[in-house]
Length: 231
Image (cartoon, rainbow, N blue to C red; front, side):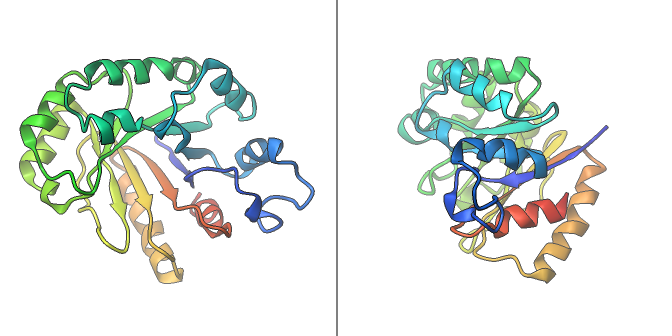
């Protein structure tokens, strides 16, 4: 059965007390509590560090069956190597996520490209050609030059999702490239009208595949409430 997974970019925010987390809840129990209300989270920690098995096992122990961790790809792949000659780094990164995959808790891996990386179709196709087919992957392009049909075709052939990200600066076209959708809601605010539109859009996406939706974290927990409302 296709499902909607919704959450925020991270969970370890003490400023979410007492709005979202109970006032007396210790930070060590944040993830466990978060997972009682939301069914997925986008992990930014992996952008700077490879996760250890001990760390992943700890996360899994705090979450129920069916909970999904969407993982941001390490910066060595996307920002330092900028996809070039990144085969080994990518394989090592994907291998580090094996505990999540074996437990059925690995959501998509998000490859977020730098805003100053303009469209380079040969670079993308070369990278996609060696990308593991055993893991669901999504690409977030942050330069508008990538929004073209030949890029979408390359993603489709590789069965990779175009991340539908939106911010105050850039909105990705609603293009479907594989059997799941990955949405990043990064605008400063989401008033009732915008959330109503999203609640209409997501079920339509669900007819074509699973949907993963992540709201931007802020000092206040509105994003968590929006994700909960969407579920």
